[in-house]
Image (cartoon, rainbow, N blue to C red):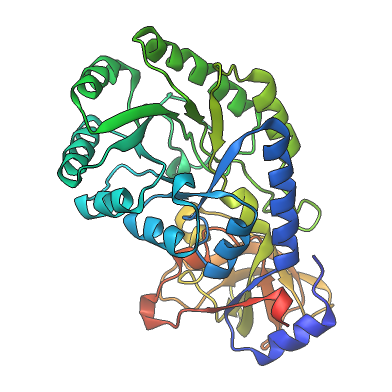
Length: 385
């Protein structure tokens, strides 16, 4: 999107920093995604961990997607936001008793179970409530998704999922548990995956791993391939959408589906990342050794990805058209890791300029905090200007 003069005039009068959401772009992204889901008769649960802003959730729920939750509070928020309980799945390696009770009382579709002890606990709690919990087994397929090590989730050394060497013990436990019902398998190999062929490996591995359970006599009506499809952080204006076409075409071509089996996905970043921006004001421009520092009023407490992952977001100066110079774009937090881009090319920048940090719709507002006792940034929306 281009920032129209009207929006910039609004930006000038609002206290910075703040999050800005282009609702038109969000709707266009959702419509495109749903068109592929409908084309292939797939099912999808939006990952609330990417962005739990209630206005964003309202838009996502309105197109009929379900919810993928990783905490009891996310389950409660999904229910409060009107998501159909029968479209809510609950994942995570450390579900507490309280969270399990919340999900059972909410009548959710499925728990994505990640360990043998978790299955036992869910069975015991469900028994006490007189309920039966539907579960999918989250399998660790030992696939390297070639993404940042902190967001790789499907390698053997990662904490997530049940490894194949555990299958016999898991199966025997499921036979003993009277208050859980196995409905399928679940996979998730990482986040911000841009090498589409990795998903071909996942398709092949998922089919192979299903065979073991089929041989034991299991019926698996659900196969959940998780999410992880990446977006373009470097050139968000020319690549506003994730490569849904290549992704779903590859899945459809290479995934062998059992008779009457439903295929589920858990999109997050790919739906919301490009519609969000962090708008900040330049406080100072400081001369360093061989480089200038553009010091913003937004910090790592508003967008932690660069500090946490070394992520690099595209940054736009909304007011300057001066000659291009290099800046370290940094925040005010008392940490050297508080930066948004090192040696970043910007038009000549000065105190009071407004900058937009792009692709801030995922893992930004939802990870916001008050470190250094800084204010929590507000959110504004394009359709309310």
